[in-house]
Amino acid sequence: MAAAVGLDPVETGLIISAALLVAGLMTLVQTLGVWRFGMRMPLVIGASFIPITAMTAIGESSGLPAVFGASIVAGLFGILIAPVMASLIRFFPRWSPAA
Image (cartoon, rainbow, N blue to C red):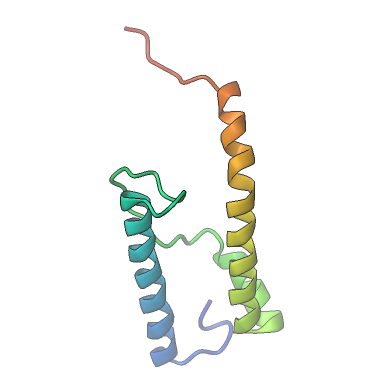
């Protein structure tokens, strides 16, 4: 994605470092819990490669600020839709293997 928006190696390193920093902070939020956020269970959050295609397309057409803006909007949408998804969990019983 960095090459698609024309970042040099130093800027690419900064983007990678920022992604790792945010992943580490979110690991702490999920593990320790902050207000109503976090599972309070030991887990590790990592950066994903799945949205790279969409981010590259947005970056090529609109630039890096649009990629960051789209990421923020997607994150806010995820926060807003989480309570709705949590209320639907009762319709999906837990699977347990036969003993």
